[in-house]
Length: 505
Image (cartoon, rainbow, N blue to C red; front, side):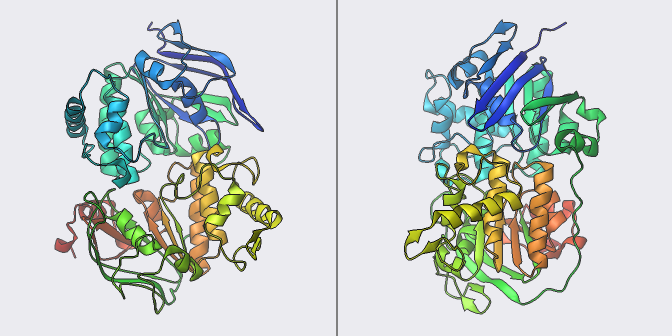
């Protein structure tokens, strides 16, 4: 028999107030695609970072290719043949894609050689990316491609993937699965974290389930159903959403012939965008990452105030050139796709992160006369934590200490708690477990039923079909006509993602 590629015994890691991993045992064989399944905060990412050398365990043993391994840092992990794609990307914003990739490779290679290798891998695996682009100009989906290419260039024996498809289109996911199956057939072992149960059942031939930092089960996911995997992970099946038809109200957000040149050479020009979101409806925008989503969201949120006068209205008021704070005062709240950095300040507590979008006493009772009253601030944060079932060590927990899914629940909850008139959310359930995803989608529908106008930008077609009343597709900076979700098909939207809607409309 082949010896295990990776064997963990008794891995334990504790932080103040929480035990992230408790006595974890895990065995991965050569050529095996092994899923690690668990709800947000179950300890999956901590365990992967221990394997990769980013975190030192408090106890336990790791054996790699039959030898005890004491990995002190990611450089030593890569030298052993372990590569990892993180859920939250490890990229430097101010340098190019090629320079970021170069940092993790052998220094004997020149930048020109690295650039050539990136182009070759991108073409081989259908992960299109321009090596000369600065990272700060990339969308989240494009950043994910960079991380995947960087990992593949190291020719790993063990590849760790933490939510690798969370911001990839269905077509890109299909191409990635072809790559991963080929790698596994060549003997590469893959540790795969995903909350998309159908992906795990299709791709993986082994699965270890974590709950509360402990191993609670091992199974072959190909022999399980989505329902049985959900029960293993969260102890129950996620609740089914009720999406009832209702009459819409007045137009809350109207975009009229919005054309906007890109702010940098790597951006996307917006061309004649027409969009309307009415009270009591959810409108979705689908599309391949990097087709103008970021530029449109910046214009709608007020981060880009260059929009022509009259092109963006809230009700009857022209808000085209009003800054984000002014739009928030008028009832527009926005959840960006980047959780850490834009959605939340990593080093600030959850309570203090409320101040990012609460600047008036009417919206935030703890802010008056220039002084911050900590008691109501903490009470409000505690209420959001309780209402949205956020796993955190109280309102004083710093944002970076939360798992990705729990931080997402807090940020979405923070904006919903403000009782918006217009709610714009990008990638609402990126990296969120099935139970939390159902909760967030249910909150979006409840907001819609309360009369809010909701705009959802997502690369998850299943999500858009589940929560939206109408759908658009964005491609090459242009927005398709809307189509009622009941009349739309995945095949049609796939065609529209290439900009081919004019022939079918």
